[in-house]
Length: 383
Image (cartoon, rainbow, N blue to C red; front, side, top):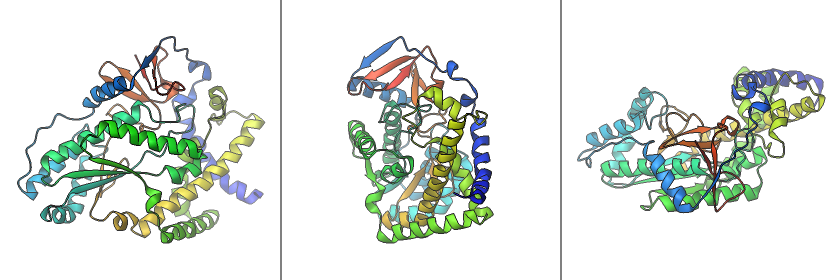
């Protein structure tokens, strides 16, 4: 990479560093993270399902509605459910605007007495950053979130006369390339997620599929064309492209595969003030990787958008999302205390309540709870 390109990259790098330096966790020293979990508990699959069921109760509102006898009544119920503080992510106004936007399509589905089908993109893999989580597969966080989605579908099924369904579309086979996740870990995560879902969803409301199974030649071609164009415009300092790239690059940088590194090294590595030559060299290499991944990620989503991919593959369906925007129902995957997605950290249980935390923020007094089916990593922590 020549000097001119490096100088342009530095602008994006500086924004990544500013993002990292604002992280409360990463301002501390590793000594503050050193934990010796003296108390270790081993639990069974039944224990896990019992705990997740109890904890998921706190994530879902106690709502009682009758079956809707008209479309207008159903829409009122729909808005109340998706606007409830325990389900909603973001502003109620987005839910209201979303219902206005999709109302015509909702009415068509209702009048044709069709099943109400939702889609949700998510669950790519456990983030491969040991400061977030040292696990490589499904744990209590994903299970609670599946329970919550199951409860949501159950409630919608109570009010909608013609049945409901949720299709979870994982993107792990696409983005494992980005973060250098092994095929073995990616496949295991997917199958573990499906197996735990089967233990929870006894009504068959939820299906889990790999979105790549629905890819077309047209989509793949468009994706590559847009990726090439995006790179070109970025290096030409196109402000629109640079803003988009710099918005996602910090996350891409933080979620590269760092599993081979020890936490004490990563604390120094993620500190922009550390001027160690080896660390600076590794950072530079990974800044470049994160930049490439940003092109990859953005062009993929842009290709799907331009081709109307979701509407063509899943017509007459309605979207759930973890990124609030008009046109989709934004949902909190866990509870109001937890700002992280299920695959970014660990559940810390306290009584019948819990919070999602990065592993570096798990309290020292927490007990490590292991599931007998996976003794390599904790399944969750408990205070």
